[in-house]
Length: 413
Image 1 (cartoon, one colour):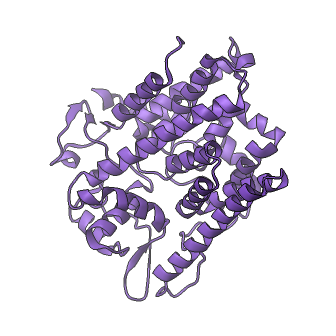
Image 2 (spheres, helix red, strand yellow):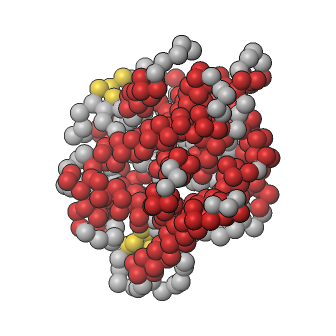
Image 3 (cartoon, helix red, strand yellow):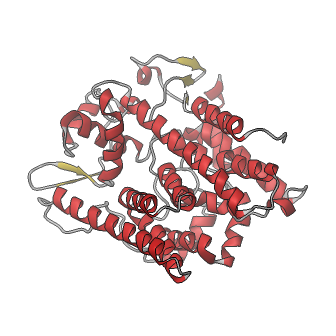
């Protein structure tokens, strides 16, 4: 690859991410009523829209905050079912499986973290009542992913100072297009935001920045609290006691805030739960399944789509300040009863760890013809394909994707 400046290279990635967010399909004509679009076969080119999984539920909570100033999603789901835009363009007139807990007053409160919705609502409230709230939330998620890539560039240079510039470019390219980051960045997911926050914790050393990032990540995704806490423990034992205490305090403050806020929101619910995060909370009764499946499950595993990352996972054996937080983060998700992550592409819960996995790859000795290059090319294929056509890869193994395309040959006609 010819040497290019960092700004130009990241701009090319940004353009690809933005173009990818405009490709949708397959969509039926009635789903696109009222939306400007260009049809190419059963696929369409249009503004960014949420696709599936948790995305419409995050959007519904954002709409409730900016339209109603509350977390009662009942009327927003009802309005979407009646043809409103609350859950996104794709879900007008659709009865969603509501991700809520109903309290004794009849309110339907979201079982996802309210803080992610609060963050997005604070940024998109000027668009309240318009059809552009959905697209704005997705564009903000793309921006978060791009900030993560920008920070990852610096992290790669710090962790591999002897590497030539082409090596850093190759790492950023593999992270941006050779993983599932592209796919999750073009929709409304928490994972690109957590990835950017994790990179920020590695990039910034000022205690105030560390506290803010650790706190923000912990309230958006509660298991992430293990990352700043583990970082803090490592810093403390290495002698940097102030930074260690700040990082550990940020995770504690985040979890305490999340507990108090959710208990206040759900005070009229008849049962107790620490964070009211839904029906799949708790440890798996068969932990080995999650530990193995997170890597090897044909649909929800990391390696069937991105075998390149096996080289990064192998580096975790080294431990140390960089990898211990990632190991803790991996274990809490692998032992989780819902380790598969529901609807998604490859291992969704491990997306925030992707920069650490790419960091662990020894590129100077592995960029040569052979198994590594085959794995990299295969991973790049799925990263780009999944980013452009997420509807085809969600909840399918690689061979199921090809079979689905074969069985639907009219898809591109």
